[in-house]
Image (cartoon, rainbow, N blue to C red; front, side, top):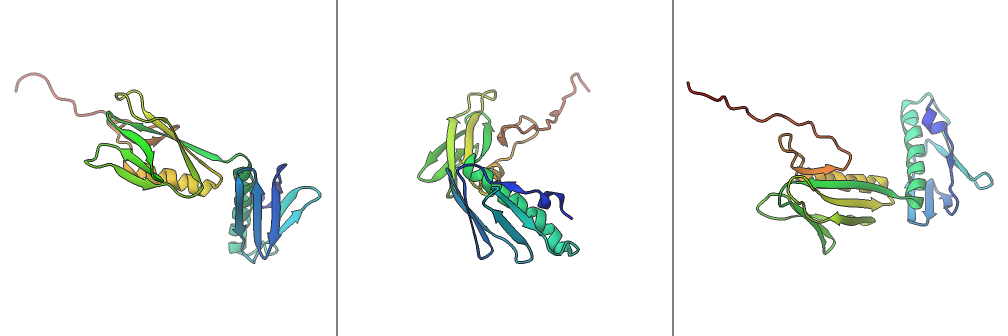
Length: 193
């Protein structure tokens, strides 16, 4: 039995929920999202108490147990997404590295002979706080925001994959709250042979 799956999802104020043909559609201030759930589950939308419950009629079947908690979590994420949204803060470390938004693409200058262009997915907004690094101490900073948690997180992964942080000087693209395990460089012995 899934403990997460059994928790009801509260519908926030100002959010409209539509349920038909095994699809839950949620509309709020930041847009609308929908999810099609598996036929092995039942989703109940209670308009009077403003709650959504996911019911697993066959808890002994392993696949149903797996989908029970996942479906409930996806519906809860949609509620947060259409009301508050999701954010990922990112930083770029390295002398001469920069970021800019141009023509629906994020243009990254991160030490290659060419700029790297990453297309911005639909529904994701990029806010650039600091466009270019200043030395190795002040990083370039930007924020990804959107209603869909999966899209925002996947876009952040795609950006980080362009130039992951290296362990010696920490240069590269990283999440703002990420800690990089640093390594000590080679130590040269002083003196003669």
